[in-house]
Image (tube, rainbow, N blue to C red; front, side, top):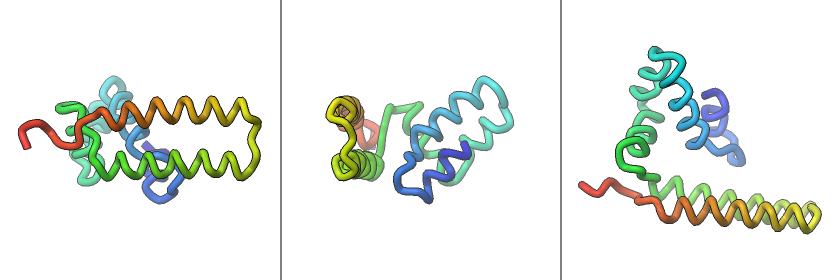
Length: 109
């Protein structure tokens, strides 16, 4: 949960995956924190949309892909080894493909 909250402020740390992971863990460990997270003004809608509809908002998709491109660009800039760069590009391409195939809105809207 803390990493997700920090991710709201820091641009290179993703927020949504950490919030979803926190919800998953809290659902099994602490009903109090799980309820708090689901009722949270900012994080609750993200979790509900994912749990009920498998939805990732267009804004979250765009932000994620922009930061993925930034990460690859930074890796090129700092001259990471070629094999690391190719693994990074491969993994981030799969993540981007997954995100882009998720709906942006629930079907009933």
